[in-house]
Length: 72
Picture 1 (spheres, rainbow, N blue to C red):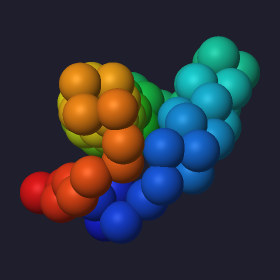
Picture 2 (tube, rainbow, N blue to C red):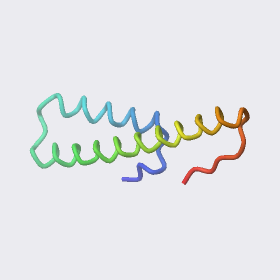
Picture 3 (cartoon, rainbow, N blue to C red):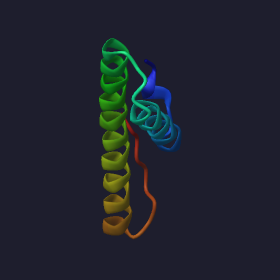
Picture 4 (cartoon, one colour):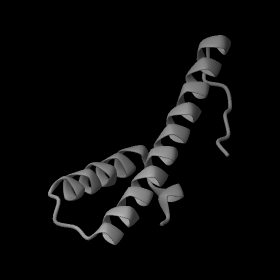
């Protein structure tokens, strides 16, 4: 999966669709595990994006201006 290129909103939307699909209960065990793994990757990706955004906000608040910030 290429979750590194997904925006926060795109990753969250995909995660919500995965959950909805799993809640139906009509997936095989193997497919459920695959979707669970993808969901965990999406969660990690979203957490990283949130942490990066939080860091940017802290920098802005400390500097009182935008300054330069480069994400990894």
